[in-house]
Image 1: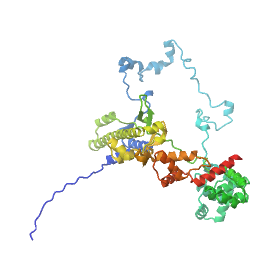
Image 2: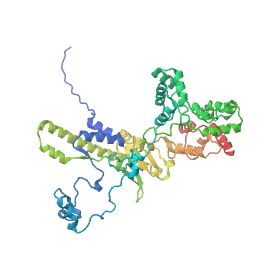
Image 3: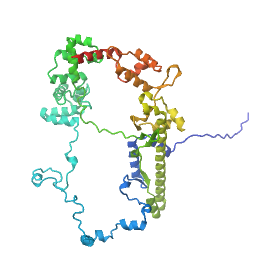
Image 4: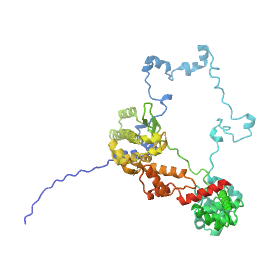
Length: 514
């Protein structure tokens, strides 16, 4: 068999993501806070980028066109102030009052000498008064009390209760084990004992001391221990109440009959115990400052239009104001000490700056397109409320605006819309579709959950709705849903079953009767 050589040509096509394209995708899914940090880093890295000031109406360094206000030369002569203006700022300034035949002492009567921080006789007594040494005036922040954290509150009580150095170290370690609600882990004693080389009994002794601190119930390892500690401080932890807090799972199930047997009390005493339990604080550490809360800044603002419909706009506070300093680029380009490296660096910076500004503009336009389509699809929700929320998915929006589903998903990630109905995340408007009875319009899963919650909130103690009853009521309104789906939605909203709700409503009715 003879061998022969052959040449095969094959052509393949593949999509290669450039670094610019990857960063453009990242910009699209960034939140406002992340975008601000990214732009700050780029401005620091690129000398041709600068952040525009947001005080254009108050005056800025940028030139102002005065052609619309009259003669440019006359205006310039009237307002221009230069270092050569001796009439105002030079040696002749002292005689300016005589030249103009007026006095400037009473022109601004409120602009007198700055007042002292306090009366001299009082300021001398308070050495820590702000502004005494430096001569500065009051700072209001010096007199505003900061919100106290839980650890600071406990550390203030620590020297009054524990004096031994070894016990102090154990107490500090236990304070470090606290979570934001004031609880510690069940194995916190063993963990601290192992880390510090102490005995578990010594750690347990310090823990008992710390449990007497304010707020009551602090340093508890379970809800039962938290409630028991608070009741003990009130001298209300009798055997019946001890049995009550040790069987809180029965209270969660609304099994009051079993609770009466375990506590050895009648129904009236059980209702009194339940009322006292409701006065306790199950989260003793929640009232203290644990972290800085961040305010959600909406990316999109929706308002009713004067001509009808809705006005959709991007929040100007979330728009990054990035400018390219063309004058600086032109000035630097004139001086080419090292034409090779310097010019390449400047060209790269200019290219990066142009790409960043275009990407930010594309990001804003993409967000605007997606938000406008969401508002168009959910017009009934904005008018009538959550009952009229339509089922919506990413593909519907993507097909309407001629974009890919992944792009819509990135746009709706961690971005918020301010509407007359409130502040919502963009993903809130996307929900599963639930079919209707006899081929009608489908319903949103969020709207169905809202109807289920409204039904349960309106039910009476003698007419508690079961899951089957809820299914029947929904079918009467045109919603075809299975019983297991109702149970799933109910459990997701932390709503107990009909049996538990019936027990709770009867108990609350008896409690209100007393």
